[in-house]
Image (cartoon, rainbow, N blue to C red; front, side, top):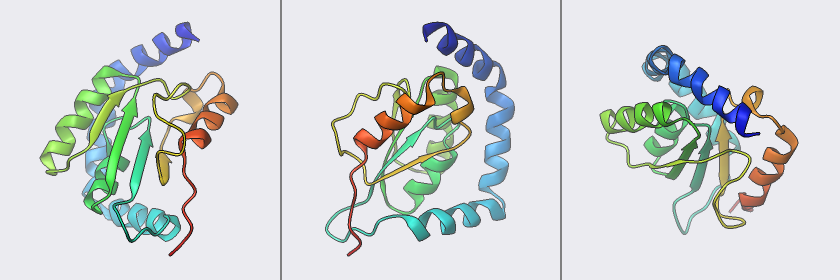
Length: 147
């Protein structure tokens, strides 16, 4: 799996500038509201605290920035350092506070049932073992009943 992770990192290091620009353009377009409406339609409702969101494979931070703009507590992970740097910079431009961490999507360093909502975008095709990754994501997801 290490070999694939190295290839993925090299690929996204090269693509980080262009992909970041595309995401910034989407944040300033109708797609921002379309994604917000769709995600929030299905997001669990919690009243006693902020919704805890995990953005896996954050790239330049598109979903992390959207979720933070809703006032949610957002953690965003990516394996590629170049993408994390883009995401941190983009989030600072939107004045969003997001916890960014470098991490392999197959092996998350979080306790069980940590997050109320998990979002991801353009990641699954980069996974060597998607079934294992999905099990890992399910492990850190906490089912919240609607209030």
